[in-house]
Image (cartoon, rainbow, N blue to C red; front, top):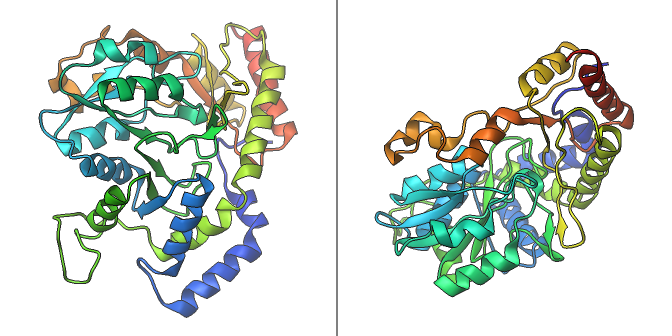
Length: 371
């Protein structure tokens, strides 16, 4: 029995009738861009988060970039970002002309360490991007308090945490706005790329709506020099279906995480991810363990038909694209250590308990017999 790192086949098979109905409606309507399905999804996604405004875009990177642009962030500004995150978080800042300033993360839940924010800030700091990485919510109350104190904007990166909660409030609904991705492997995934921006203020929402469409909300009238970043009707139709199931799928992911914990606690040198508590409720986009034997364990699991991932193997500050920022090995030791020790295990919602048990048994065998 092989256990793939991720598969959508079982999920899509269960949704087959709903998806076929959506496809039929899509073909009959003949609308491809910015039509009824997109508007329906934007309204539903905003309602899901109890936020007033949603603008769908082409991908998660654009969602962060357009959010920052609407806040007039650009050259000369600095934006605080986690040291350990997806490359897109930093890249979106750089696309505006601003400078990403990395802040180390908490190794227990991989989110930005709020206690380090003030020390990393300068007079040029204009915003923070808290990333709810791997489905773990950031510590939002103290982060929001610091942002208010220093008049920083907060743009949440919620791409990996749709449905997670911090102090009973959904991630993606805390900041001035939030950006997300609907890449197919996400907790809420399309059949291609997609993204969205949630916002509190109509002035920002109007900017997002225009900027994603060449700077236009009225045909052939352009008040901004925008971009082409639009969610298509077919992806919106799929997301409209999937959004209704998100809470159930997230509950399964949490159940899988708890099962892994029961089976892997005390095994070898494993450090298991934080399961959270009533104030921090993760949704486990990824189940990320840490071990000094990561590379050997990964090879062993793959030899036994078990897929794994590394998110992310090279710290962003050591990537060639960011050499000009002047960071060197040792500059951000937590991010560097994580890049050498983290391993993501399968945790997609439709996994069977027997498959999780196979993964755990293989890990136990590795530590018992192969070290």
